[in-house]
Length: 396
Image (cartoon, rainbow, N blue to C red):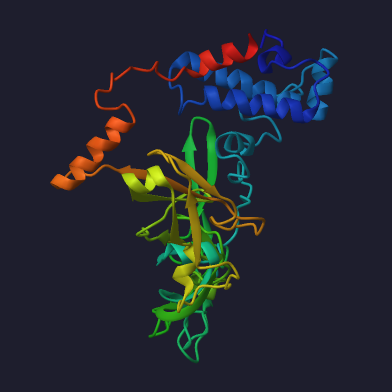
C-alpha cells in the first residue's frame, strides 16, 4: 500500500497498542461491508484491516518502521498474513470477545444461571389523612411468587437432578461458523437445546413445572411512618417476587393513597380549612371551637398518640373581614424525617344574610343610618400592585 499505515488508522507513529486497537475498532464499525456494502468502502475496509494487522504485531510494526517488508515477503493479501485474527472485527461490533478467529475457539460468556433475582412488586394502600400524618400499622395481602416447597427451587422432580446439556456440553453456547470474502468467522450463540442454561431438567417438578417457584397469597404487616403523603412508597426489602430457580426475592413497594378529608386539605406539611361565620359575628368578634386533626385519632389505630388537644379555641377579633387567614403554628403535618410539624391555616368566610324579616331590615337600616352608610358611594380602590411595582417601590 502506498499510503502510510499510521495515517490510514489516524494515529501518530508513537501510538500505544491500545490506541491503535481503539482506532481500528472505530473505523471497522464505520467501514464494515454489512454497514456500507459499496465497493469503495470494502476496499477501504481491507486497507484499514491490513494496516491494523501490521501495526498490531510488534515484529511487523518494527519491520515497517525500518522501511522493510512487514509481511516478511509473503504474498498474502488481506487476512492471509500469519497471526491475523478476526476477533477484533467481532469486538468492534459486539463490544467483547465475539468469537474465535480463523480456526480458534471462541470465548463466550458461559451458561446463564437458572437462579436469578426476582422482580419488585407494587401494591397500593389507602389511608386516612390522620393516619398519614401520625403513622399507622396495616396488614396487607399480597399475591406473589414464592419458592416451590416441593423441589426447593431447583425445578427438578423429587429424586432427580438437572443434567449437563449434551449439545453444548454445559457451556450454554454453541459455535456457528460463517464464510464470507473476509474469511471464516466463528460466533457464539445461546444453545437452543438448554436455552443457554448449560443444563437440562429431564423430570420437571410437577408443582412448579421446573420454574422453581409458585404463586402464593400471604399477609404482611406494614408500618407506615408519620408524615407520608399521597404517592409516597414504603419499601419492604426482599418481600417481592421470588426469582426463577429459587433466586432471591425482589422488594415490595407499598404506595400510599391518602383519602380526602371532610375538613382539612393538605398542602405539603401545612393543613388548610375554611370556617364560615355570620356577618354579625364578624363585626362584633367571636370565639370558635374547632377540631384539630388529632380528633380523628380518638378510637383509631393511628400512632403515635399525640398530647395536643383534639380541639382549640379560635378567637376572631371584631371587624374580621372575609378572606382573613389565621395561622396556628405546629398543628399541621409532622415531617417525614421526624423534624417539626407544619402549620394549620384557617381561612375565614363572612356570610351575608340573604333573607331578612321586617324587624331585621329595620335594625339593619337603622345601623346603616347611624354609620352613614345609607347611600354608599361605591368608591373604587386601585388594584393591588404587581410584584415588579412593589420591588420598584422597595428600592426607590
